[in-house]
Length: 221
Image (spheres, helix red, strand yellow):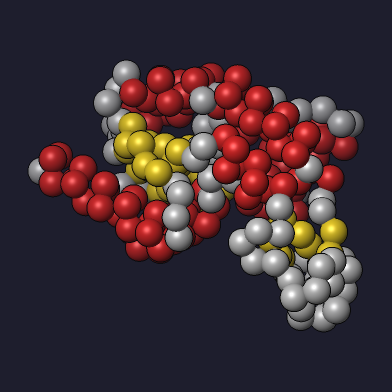
């Protein structure tokens, strides 16, 4: 299957993408991973992206599209893929549509993970990270440390990342509503969007998504 995963910051896209890709035996293609891989490997697109990012500018759509299409052309993606973080706007969505059409392919589904805005703010703004080891993550509400501000694992200081503050989260949500959310209407016009609640336990959300995809397959058959 060829799937796009979309949803606001804090919807759990990365977590769900990893589980769904494993369950469906297709590669999870993440924009963040693409940038890191291209930059570390010194590809032409990676060098372009690094120079732009080092100058403090946003990477142009054309570079992002190029990286994504290169990755989708790899042998492990022949039978399908799950895109996470791409397309990020309607221009990128249209470019993806055109590239797939040229290859005689098309998307099978766009999974839209829905979370109330205040829940997104609560999820992200409540995160606390250990200064000694960023793998030690706690949450002020859902998984608080035994002692406030102290990591249960190593005793390190817990802190809130600058991009996890409520003010920053709301700005990120504004960007999502302005730039990315319009792709949902773009794909609704093609009958591809499956809207799912991203509230609840991770396994529950994964089951909702897998059930929706199973139903989609049956309808297509």
